[in-house]
Each structure stands twice: as structure tokens, then as C-alpha cells.
Length: 394
Image (cartoon, rainbow, N blue to C red; front, side, top):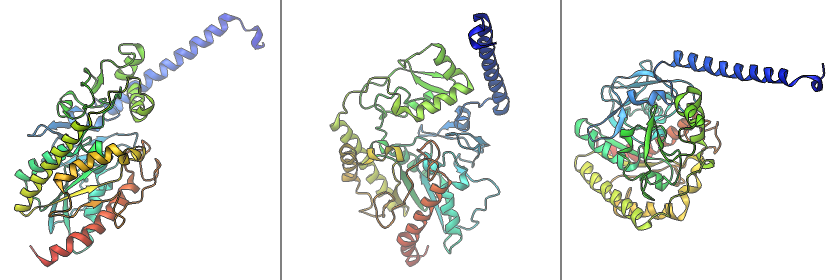
């Protein structure tokens, strides 16, 4: 029977069977996925609400004594272990130095926390391993968190240094100048997706360009109420299903193509510069306190994520960073700074394409990217820090 002689009823039946088959496949995928993943079924399940807590200063951090898996940025499921105060640590099979010459606290954002890779594949612990193989073993404490900006890093450094002993603190800022200060939100309809409601309270600087939009929580995601299609069938699938959550993550990763909410007003430059200057003064004050206590305090600047490379170098970015650097004088007073993006002696060369030195999401370092960063940080440490330590033994 030719296609021309097939009755409309037969076509209807075939189409109906196809639709029912697709629906059955989606339901089967949903049920199987939730059985495998349990209660934490979102793509960011390792960082969902029951893995996070507030610190005494109100910042978000992972809970203590975690032993679970995380699935982030479409990477393989990776182990997530934390110590007794909630800092991410390698698994028990990873050898740590028994007697360390220095206790080093590292505080950064997702590329230092190790988004999408196991802790032992992230650069802080690769750096620790490299130092342990030499004659100056150190013990690294990774207090980074996904989404931390510089003001939050400084708050966390002060908080942890009051309760624990550290010989040296590395503050690691990724991305552009605006990201450093939490000033990067511009009219993005999906900007707050994935944050918990209590986390948004901590981002007072996240929306400096206009009034913060009204938000709502849906299964651990925080979305704008004025998003297109709110309450419709597609919105339901994106927020209520396992498959939809994965599609939503993909949408977030490609958000530059999804600017369906009108862009906010032009930024108030004086306000941005004032915020950056205030953070710079905060850095200077904290550096003075650490210097008086004999704690090393260093700024490590890692290259911008490859998609944001241009943002790190436009005139607005440079002016904001200059407003911070004016009062802060990072690297010019007591402690050397490491600029992995701009210092020709320690520049890390990363391949600007996903799947090489970055994960497929194009924003976070892959295992190879982490290894490259660890190698440069280790060389800088041996060349710039160790000579002074050996001259003044503890």
C-alpha cells in the first residue's frame, strides 16, 4: 500500500502510537532516574539544599561529614566528601601529608572548589600532592564554594581564621572584574536558577543595575516570576521533571542566547566603583590583621572562563578592578600576588574550548585544566614563597 492510499485514520493511529511511545519512554526515564538518584534528582543534586548549610556569618557552605556523590555540569558522578567543619576533602584513599610545614587555607569559587571533578583531581589538592613530593609538605584546606564572590571569600577567610589555625590563606578570584565583586547580573531571565532562597539573601550586590526581580522556588531552583511562559506546560516540565531540569541546566549554560527579559538599565558606574573601592578597603584591613598575626595572605587571579574572556578586559571591567586595587594595593604591600592570566612568568595556557582544559559546559576546569593550574601555582610557591620561609624557619 502506497503512502498516498493510507487513510487519515491510519495516520492518526500511527501518530497516536508515536506520541504514546514517547510519553511512556519519558515516564520510564523519570521513574528509573528517581529510583537511581533518590531524593536528590536534580542535575546539581550533590549541591542541593540538604548538602548545604549557613555558616555563622550567613554564607552558604557544604555540610560537615558528607559522603555522597555529586552530578554537576553533565560530568560523571563524582564523590563529595567534607571534613568536620564542612570543607571539601579528597576520599580516604587519597594520601594526605601527615606532618605539614604549613597549613594553607584556599578560598575560591567553583573552579577552585572543583565543580565537575573529584576533589583529588582539583588543583588545590594536586598542588598539595606536588608539595608533599618535595621537601616542603603542606596541608591544603579547601573552603571554596560554588558561586562565591570576593566579598564572600573575605568574609569566609575572617570567619575561619578566628576558629582554626592557618599559616597562609589564598583568595582565588575567577572570571571577570564584575564577577569578582558579585556585580555580574544583567537582565538574565534564568540568572538565579539553582540557588536556594536563603542564598539569594546573601547576594546584596548581585543586582546593582535595577531592582531585584521577584523570585519563587520550584524544587530547589529559584526562578524569576516574570520569566516567559510561567505556569505553562513547558514551564511545568522544566521545573517538575528530571528531564526538564536537565534541559533547564542546558538553557542556563546557553543563557546568552536566552535573553528574553529586557536588559536592565545601564549600570550606575559611580555605584559600581564605590562598591569595588569598599571591597578594596576591606581587603586592606584584613591583610593588616593577618600580617600582624603572621598569616600570609595572597590573591590568586585565575583566567576568565573561556566564554567570558572578553568581559574580563573591557573598559568597565578594568575601571572596576582599578577602583578595588586603589585602596587594596594587592601584592604591593606585604604579600606577593599570583596572576595566572596576566603575569608572563606564571601565565597558565588553557585551551579555550570545552572538552580540553574545560568541561563540556565551557566554564569549569577539566582534570587537565586543574593539573595545569596546580603546576603553575606550585612553581610560583617554590619560587616566590619558599625562599623567604627557608630563611626564617618556623
